[in-house]
Image 1 (cartoon, rainbow, N blue to C red):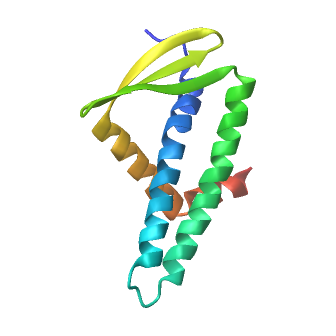
Image 2 (cartoon, helix red, strand yellow):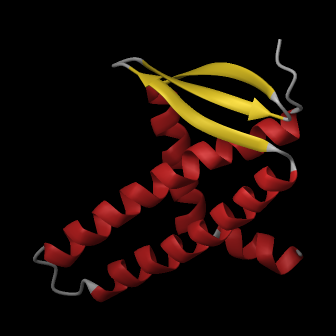
Length: 125
């Protein structure tokens, strides 16, 4: 049983997933830039916008973590699972995540940002 409330666990998970998404977007930007696209500018622009939005959300997540006395660290990884250490107000909890679940979640986030779902969130604030 976890001592971490669901809202705070969501923040910790964002701190896991968003850097992974940034890494993927950076790699994709390099691949597209070096590819033989006739019109690569729209793709690069989409990736640049997405990177900026993810960086903004990651900054907010890190601020929330600092205020809530939270940290997340990757402890171990094998072919099937990745273990993370969640530090929450002095308590430590280890959580195992199935690697395909991580990949699927990062893909969901990528689709969310590509569909500009983050912009509708900004307008409502």
